[in-house]
Length: 118
Length: 382
Image: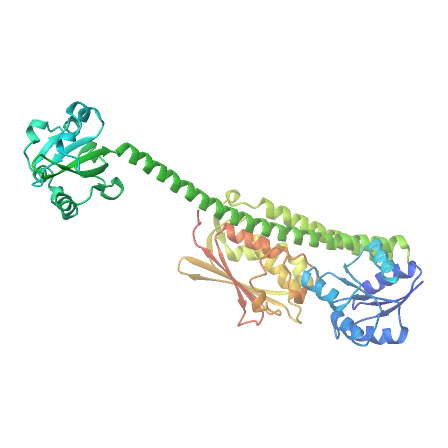
């Protein structure tokens, strides 16, 4: 069992991911944007972050940048419907562990999570 | 320099397929063989002792005379090539065409030491014709290569476009299908915090979205210019008909539509409503303001009828205006909204079939986007 933080501004998508991760026996926390994500990371020290990209206040790019600037070593899996290769490249350059198309299938999500935690 | 005695005897001169004549330094003809008789129709008896320049005045041209004079003064042999000079003696071969001649002129010496000119003329008309035919073939082959290269570039472009289109289709179909899959997973997990009815509603909506994409693709693939039937299109009536058809959706979206169309033109009434439906749908989708508004108007400009769609939505950033007609392109600012982005590609295809021009800009009146479509009043054929 791992501690996982889910960051997404869509309540339904958040609930969707949380339900699947909880069902896979993980302890899950949630945040609604990048700013909340940083605060929740500091508070819960998760083993893994699963985050959306396009969010109000602070988007996924900024959040990842901010976290790694602060020395975080927590792997981040990015979920996004943005298929532009430039976005994918930027996310990976920032140090994300993986980028999955949104919404991911259960199998794809759990496989990426397992890899990130191993 | 060979002497005139060394000229091959008559029997040889008459047998070789060359026109041979000998001139003295006054251009008086001393020798005229049978081949020349055949070519010119002038017998040896009638030309011997005549000035060649009288028979063929072109010999007086400086380009010939200066070189002959040089030869008579001990200059070297010379060649008048068929490529450069075409002929020395203008002899008609067929249909008024003059024989092409390869000419060599060599000096000879007579008994009294006078320098004579022996002129050997080879008829290369057939050879030249063959060379010209080969040149024509070569030019045709080069043209063909150019066309092929152009077609190759066009095919490459089309292929790139098709690949990009396929990629967008795959992505946009993946969206609703993966959403269905993701939502079904939630149902299978049996998380009691999810309302099953809500999940099914979402699955239905996502699958409907996928179906709309497929239907849009069908429409794109089925639309070809040769299938269009043209008739007089009354824009005002078409707007009213489309609004009637979309009545419920329009009411739900709160979109106010102002119809100021009043013109007619020759168009295909079967596919044009697609244009109106898409602009109305997009206005409903993207005009996320308190009082969304779409104004549809028309104006006459010379031979054109210009149809305008203006809204009070967020407008289209200038740098993205060229992109919006690529199939499935969706503006970044709208990437979280529902919709498949296929509509405008369909619109563009319908407009291309009508040879209509579309401009994208900003609406001065309403503050949002403005799409202006110029239709020709009469049917435009290829």
